[in-house]
Length: 215
Image 1 (tube, rainbow, N blue to C red):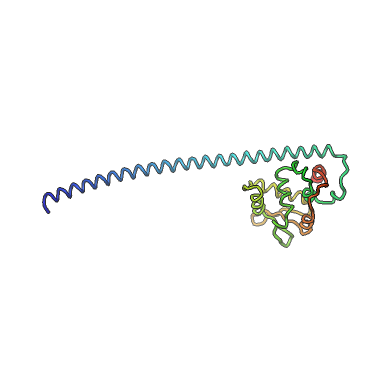
Image 2: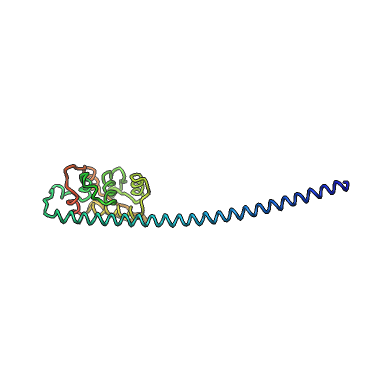
């Protein structure tokens, strides 16, 4: 190999080493940029999670405030109509049946969770699963039904409140049980038959009569 060839080879090696150094510098800068962006994204994700949590809390408080206001309205209607004669045939029904029979003009006086409980009770056979004790409706199913109804996943507190309403308004025909960490609302065969036979009445009792039955 001639001296000229050796010098050319050395020059190429120097050039390649410079390119390698430049690439290493670029790579380091890119890694630093990626790391900085990753930290920014992580920070933004954490902030977003905090905002979502706060929004959920505010929404839950708003629902609670709305429920409280409507409960007060219902109590007021009950007091104002305490001397109004009630339909004897209606008083023989469970509050949950009476809830289903409410005329359309009375529905606006229901709280959001009362309306959700009514929605589920109207088609209980469609949603509940047949079990030895009657029919069972678990929290996951209620969450799925409400998501389909409202287009968003309900809060755990909302699902629990709806289950409580079904239990309270169903009286002896409904109870809540917890097995293997899962809450279920159990309806007796008779309760489901009664609910299935109940139809919305345009001339039934108003919200006052139903509220009086809940107390």
